[in-house]
Each structure stands twice: as C-alpha cells, then as structure tokens.
Length: 101
Image 1 (tube, rainbow, N blue to C red):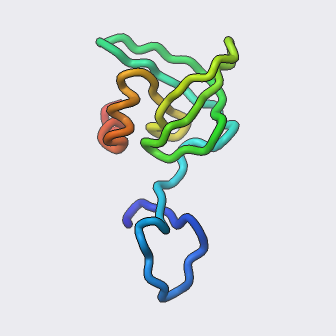
Image 2 (cartoon, rainbow, N blue to C red):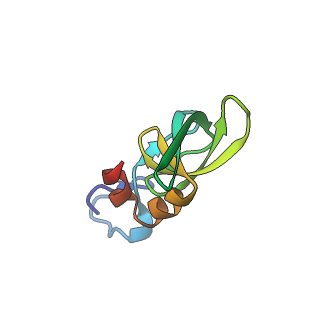
C-alpha cells in the first residue's frame, strides 16, 4: 500500500482492497512527454503530447508533435515514456526501469 493512491474516496474504518488502490499518475492527458526508443545501445527521443493519463508501467499513446503520428509507449516517470523493446521491460517492472534511466 506504500506509494499507492486511492481510486475513490475512502470511509474511515472501511476495509481497503487491492482494487481500491492504484499507482499515482506520472503523466496526465495533454502533458508534454519525452518518449525514448532504446535498442542495442541506441537511444532516440521525441517529444509528444499524451492522449491519456498513465501511472508508472501503464501504456500511454503519445502524439508526435512533428509528424502527428501516434506512438505506443509505457510511462516510466513524470513526463517520461519509453517505446520499443524497452517498453516491455518497463511494463514488467516499472520501478526497476525508472532507476536505470
């Protein structure tokens, strides 16, 4: 429960279940997001706009500001996301990936 946020208002004394909690959002809809594609020692970055809210390890679609194309990415920190092979690792263990950035 440490580091998690309530999905809704909670009553004092009421039992808390895992479905009542979520990771705090690190990307909000409309935020500017730096997306990194990391593969084989190569790191390419692009800036885009998030189309939805996302917590660490959650998928987020980012619209590339230059081309207008949608990029499937995974949130790894405030205003940060990864795409490509690194996205699978970030989805599996978002805290570990964030520490390695």
